[in-house]
Image (cartoon, rainbow, N blue to C red; front, top):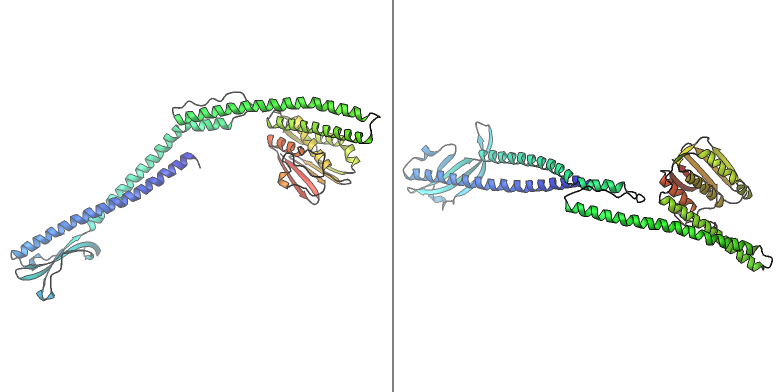
Length: 418
C-alpha cells in the first residue's frame, strides 16, 4: 500500500472517530440544554396554574390536553414532591403515540390538595436534534471529501521529489559512471535523503571499481605463477632420476595447480558476469552450438562408456552474449559427464525456448535447492570446484532465463527455459 493511501486512511479514521465522539458530545449537550429549557417552561406553567387556583379560578377551566388538575384527598398522606417524567401520549391528529415530558406536583391551596400535571411535547426537540445531526453529518462529509482531495493533491506535490529519487535509484547501475541528478526540493528531509543517497552511491561505485580491479589484477597475477608451477612440475615429472614417491608428489602438485588454474578462471568469469561486463547480445544458434560442443566432448563420452540420446531441433535461437552462451552449454555438458556413472546415459532434448539435459548418476549429496550455490559439489567429484552450475545460474539470471534442477528416476535433470 502506498504511503499516500495509508496517510489518507489514517486521516479518514481519525476524522471519523472525532466526528463520532464530537457528535455524541454535541447531541448530549443539546439534549441537556433542551431538557433544562423544557423543565423551566413546565415549572413556569405550573406556577401560573397554582397562581390561578389561588386566585379562585375553577380547576375545570384550567384543564386541557397539556394540563391536568386533580383534587386529592388529604387522607392520602404527605403530598408528593415535584418530579419530571418522560412518557408517551396518543396524538389524535397524528394517530400515533408521541414523546412527552410532564411535571407532576401536589399543592395545598385554599385548604384543598391538588395534583397538577403539566405536559410538554418532545417532538420539536427530537426534530431539532435530528436537524443538528444531519447538518453535522453534511458538514463532516463535505470537510472529509475536501480534506481527502486536498491532502491527495498537496501530498502528491510534496512527495514528488521523493518519488523522483526512488525512480532514479531504481534505474541505478553501479557500473555506470554518470552521476545521479536528484530534483531540487525545498523540503529539508528530502534534501538530506538525496545527499545521503548520493554519498552512498559514490562509496558503492568506488568499492565496485576497487573490487573489479582487484579481481582482474589478482586473476592476472595468479595465472603467471600457476603457469610456471605447472611447467616446472611437468619438467620435473619427465626427469628419469625421480623416485616413484617423488613422481607421485609432483603429479599431485601438477593436478592441484591445474585445478587452481581452473578455479581462478571460473571465479574471474563469475566476477565479470556479476559485474555485467558481457553486455553485447547477439542471436545465437543454440542448435549449432550444442552440436559443436557434443562433437568436442564425444571422445570423453566414449571413454566413459556413456550412451548419448539426442533429440535436437534445428534453428533454435537465443538472444545472449555469444561467449556466455558457449560457457553455458560447456558447463552443462561437463556437469552431465562429470557427475555420470561409467556405462550411464545422457539424454538431451532441445526445443524452441527449452533445453533439457538428463544424466544418470547417484543421488545428490546436497539439498536440491543448493545445487546452484557456489562451492557446492558432489562428494564423488574430486575434480569439481562447485562453480560450474553457479556460472550457469548467473548467466541465466543476467539474460532472463529460468534454470531448474530435479533428481528423478535415477537421473539428474537440468531444465533451461527462455
